[in-house]
Each structure stands twice: as C-alpha cells, then as structure tokens.
Image (cartoon, rainbow, N blue to C red):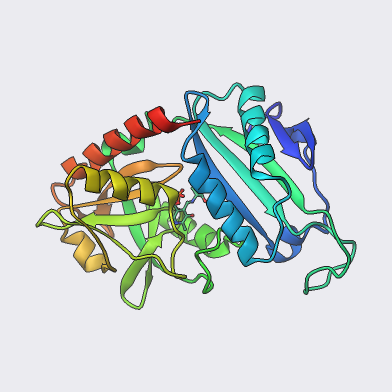
Length: 288
Ligand code: PDD
C-alpha cells in the first residue's frame, strides 16, 4: 500500500503511514475481530449488501455490536473509494473487540470502544492475468478452527496454507479435511463434472459462505446449468472437466492445475470463462 493511501481509523481519515491502533488491541492479542472484503468496479461497490450482511452475521456470532450502522459504514466505504480515487480494487473492513488496557481472555467487563479500520487496495480485478491463464492450486490439510463460517481475523492456518502453495508455485491452496476439499484458503472451490454439473460444497460451519459463491450459483442456474451442493475430493477435482475458484478478490478464476496434474485440457474451461463473463457483467450492472 502506498504511504499516502487514505485509511479510516476509528472515525478519522488518515494516511497509511500514520494509521495506528493500540498494542492492546484484542485482534493483535487474541485475533478477536472480524473482517470483510468487497471488490470495487468503476468506483462502485460490488455485492455490498451480501458482504455487509455477512459482516453483521460474523459480528453477531462473536457477540459484537457493529461499530457503525450499515448506512454509515457504506458511507465510509464510499469515502475511502473517493479519497483514494479507486476505480478498480478492493475495500477492507476490519472490526475488533477494542483495546482495553488489560490483557484478559474473556470479553472486557467494562464497555470498550470497538476498533474499526477500513482501507483500500488498488488492484486489477477484471484484467487479472490469473483469470486469463488460469491458476495452479496445491492441496493442503485444513487446520482451521471449527467455525469457518465466521469471517474472523484468525487467519494463521490460511497464511500457512497460502505460503505452502506459493512455495510450490501455486496461487491458491485447496484445504482438505477427511478426504474432501472444504474450500480454498481465501476462496470457494468449484468443479464442473464431465456430465456438466457444477459442484461446490454445501454451506455449514466448515466453510465461509462466499458472497461470490451465491451470485455465481444464481447466474449458473439462470443460464440453465445444473448446480449441486456436495463435497468433492482432490482426485475427483483432478479428473473433472473443469475447476474454478470464486471470491471478491478473484471473481471467477479457472484452476488449470491441481497438485501438478492438469485439469481438463489444462487451459481455462468454457464454463468457468462463461461464468466469469456473466459475473463481471452483473457486477458492473449492480455495483452501488
Ligand atoms: N476471502 N472462503 C474463504 C476461506 C475466504 O477467505 C473467502 C474470501 C471466500 C470467498 O468469499 P467471497 O466470495 O465472499 O469473497 C471463501 C477474502 C477475499 C480474503 O480474505 O481476502
């Protein structure tokens, strides 16, 4: 991030180099916080209602109150987009249980102001090279906690999985538990079977309910494609016609290699490319 990028910290807009929070922040001490990431296209927020609904669900699951009302938060997101002249990229929201001056595991007994931080990341999302060429993925054991449906800042297992993937020359890790893929380290995992069915894991505490996942499943169904929610293994994905990931940061990105084995033709497949085009078109139309 540029030093001059403008961030929001607890009510103030400040330059990135000056943006600071307490060493006692509970996110620093305990990973006691939640976050959201929404894409920006043409200076507008993509799927913002879904992201903010999930943000509120994550907060509620951890018994936290939103630091701002939804309308006020959207206003801050727009202000961040405007102040950074962000045409295409990402906006991050990070809220923590605040910074009481005592390190104690249970929630603070006295009311503490939550910490709320927003920042933007300028990045090509539509023209990303990975989308045109497809990405390689590595399987990694899913070592996360039991409530992956909460978008918490406790991301150490994902950090290690992503690093293991990167060291193997891969852009993403598929997390595997009990022989099945749960999801990507920072994305939802899909395959397209040889009979043309789109398969992704059903929602549960085992995965994050992806906002892009909902939108892409709807678009697939509207396009007459059949979508099945069930678990699949690495072997099934390697033998599938296609594989792809979805997220706010990658939209729909084809996976062309899994653990060193090419998937399908080894090039981005027609279903993933079609869904990516449909998603971008809809995101452009509905971004707010
Ligand atoms: N990650 N699963 C996990 C574990 C994720 O971290 C993400 C998103 C997704 C996809 O969710 P969505 O479609 O709502 O972005 C699924 C974000 C982008 C991140 O942490 O950077």
